[in-house]
Image (tube, rainbow over all chains, first blue to last red; front, side, top):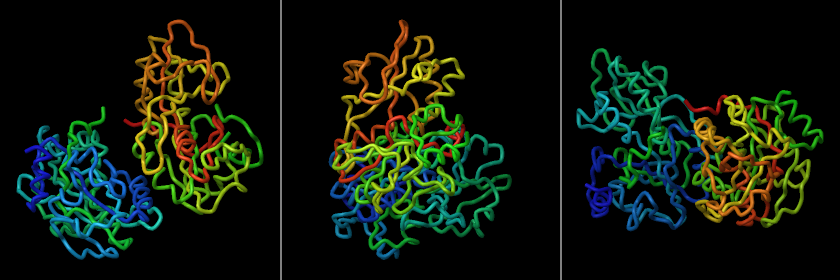
Length: 256
Length: 256
């Protein structure tokens, strides 16, 4: 299905995780904040490029852009949204038009789904795809570099990788810096302050087989964790796993 | 001379082009704008990463940061500043303390000086160094992607490169994306709307020998050209060629 068709179905009301949708096209994390917070959020992203690689920014009053096609609308084209008031997640909605404010600035942040096809092609298993689950995500004890009023912990996604494939997983994902790039941590979850891999903060736990190493990548949910910590009056993000399907090809994200 | 010593001498009043100062350390372009314009400028940089690669941002009331050392002061440590009112260059000063406003946000932008040592090492001549001049810079007819109120032309620097060295020049500078990276244009200046290479808009003209090709790199003066086009009430930049000498090593800017 083309990204435009996928977005149209979500706009018409379909609510689903977007894993596997429009293969070959990049999916994006969403975080929208009032204009007054936009500099702080963009600087936070600039200072923390691994968790917050910016693919594009829609300024106040802009509801579409090159990533969403001519008839796109960021308020309706994501399958599900999380609305935050003063940093508290108050509501999940399938259509954010009523919650949207005129001065919101929408940030589209790269998503590690873009490198998963390349991992699979190279024979690196991707467990959450095998098991039909959302990727497990964890808050870490590692703080991001703050910017103005924005601060918060690094959030990571985890994929169990067979020991003999870890080097390939690093090498392959390094080539995708705009969708989180190389892992931030390979091995012991305690090193990131993660107590229990079976209890992720977002998404779903996956099986780790003998001989596999947990590998952690910076995650685009980090800006939402920063919203929870920094408490801007209003913010709207995607619901975890329910991403914006963009017109950008994954192949365009590979660096030489 | 260490970057800290260089900055101390500039702080004490020395006014000089910084070409060749503190070899091995990155130099930075400066553009400081009122907080009200900071989001637009940061988004302009995000949307135009080749001319505006951000090395760091000092928020309002911050006068130093990791690039300037503990006792650094962005208002005094650049050898010469250009002050703009409503986009008009009104004054060059050696100390910007009096012109500075409390709500200014200072952007430090990568400078192509950082890859020149690597070019020389590989046997690629760098003419403006040979001739002891400032690099020639030109406004092009290519517009940057606008952001909010910020818009303006791409500015480029030019280095004449012998035909047999062009591939090396591309390959080497590609490895330095945070200081403008690969050239944006190789060859005919008319393709960028440049009528006369002997009349640069900033810096000084250099000799082009037979068998050499003019090679154009995006230039960190682009944000100052955007200030002139977009006319924020106040802006302070470095005077062309009079850069901030930072504590960042050029070698830290190389991508694998």
